[in-house]
Image (cartoon, rainbow, N blue to C red; front, side, top):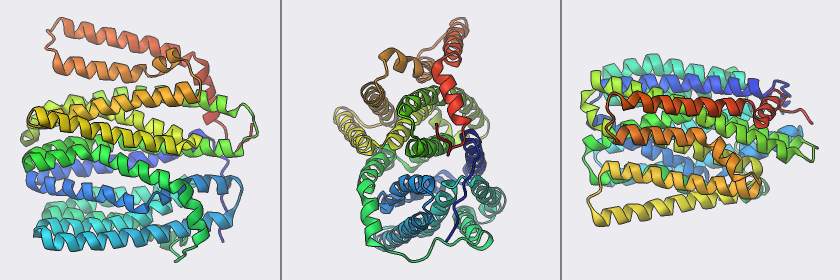
Length: 492
């Protein structure tokens, strides 16, 4: 039996440690993606993205158990319940591994009969990767919820090193197959690290029906969230794949993949932030703790949006430079660059509301929002397809509009109705989101002349500066700073 690590680091240090490990993984993925785009032709790159779509759906076969486990681990950690911490982790790893294995075998069998040899190879390799990823993911959870971020950082450094060196070499020598086999090695190395070096085995075969029943209370809502979240975030690519050429799908997928990588740090940091907020709620005896959490989330919303205001502009400039100077075969993707930058910010907002719902125990509400998002998007796509030929820009713009609509509804529901925050505050803390959307809509669709362009840019920068100054002087910002500098086990 393990002895749970009672880490007394501040929440800020844990977020920085976790964010640092996420940054390492993000940078390695960006380097490998850029290299693969350079070396592979568009048909091969389209095949990889088809495999990534399949890979993303493997999380469905965790049936929400892994997300339900995250809530339980916070509770067991705060209560120092080492036995349940290990037992619940072991049960979830056992069930999800068996489930992913069965699904993978069925997918391989289906593609053996209906797919070509290239598609079958992709499915086999991504199935093996999915199995290893499932084990790797639960090891990461196991240590992360004890505050042992140094172990997760080392794991990700090992993975990044393999991606940057052997994977690029294998890509150069053996093309798409070498690239994909190296991806298997990446996750295999992580599992070996946790098993052989740390000597912690959570892979013991363990099926306890009482534990499974307990987990399923929340897992069913998480499953709905994941199912409709995946449909909502990948349905656009399925439409482009089925209605357009493989070349168009490759260009669309490149932007989708870049935006996914750009979202990775935010999703990871928001995830660990949610973990500590959950621990605070579980551990706190302060009757006014919900007021503190409210202020913390408001400040977090502003900081997240403001950070991605800068990040999206940076990505926009770098992407345009690389495509124009080095990857002319993907020049058709530039027409969609602006809307994808807006989609990044919109999806960051969606991740924020997911984080809020998890922290506050409002999982069923978020599940309903994900269902609503998916249904509205499908209806809009059906309307568009009825009145004209579907084009990739219609598909992307429709996704942005629906995501923004759901974010507005979520903001009103969570912040106004549930937390009682005034509309003026909600609007203020969403200003970076409003600014970045306005910026890309204007600059992508209106042909400004040389005089008006700097004037518009100066006006937007002035508004940003004023809103940032007001934010830094706000009580919500001070509450946020005080909160993250605490130990994540500290009571008020």
